[in-house]
Image (tube, rainbow, N blue to C red; front, side):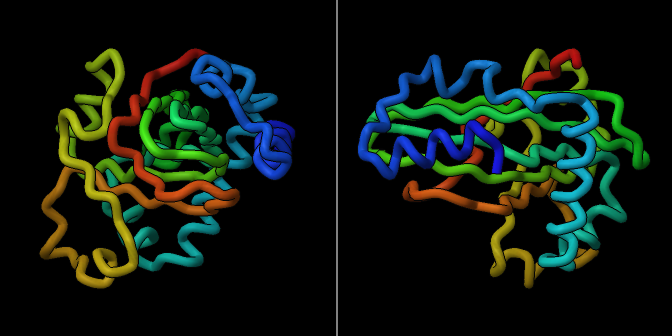
Length: 188
């Protein structure tokens, strides 16, 4: 467990979590190195494939895969989430992205999770490359997969631009969503 995860969970458990959005979304949560980000991304994908055969099936047809191995989310009325990831194209990593979201409303807690977005169409890849940041819910269609949706997915029903899988949830926070998340290319 990374230091940022431990810190957030300790704050939650002691009842003193009051992180403003600016702290939750600062680059403090960055991976220590490019090598660590590569390793964590590959390990996360392999773990996802082991628990979800549909994810493995999608990986074989995907034109590219965005992998965010560790997103840290915290909130007390106002909340935020931040993490860094990679884009895999033809098995190679050559682009890096961050994932940032902000929220407000009834919320309290902290958690970490990862997610992978399987880009199935040229439209999705072009949008990611041409936009100044992809806000999930705007642009190409992204379907967030759960067990029920995954069971009904087949090669004949693959019609959407992208499919997202959330994995490795840890911590205490009600609900998880990537809707409203902004993915932006960064330099490493």
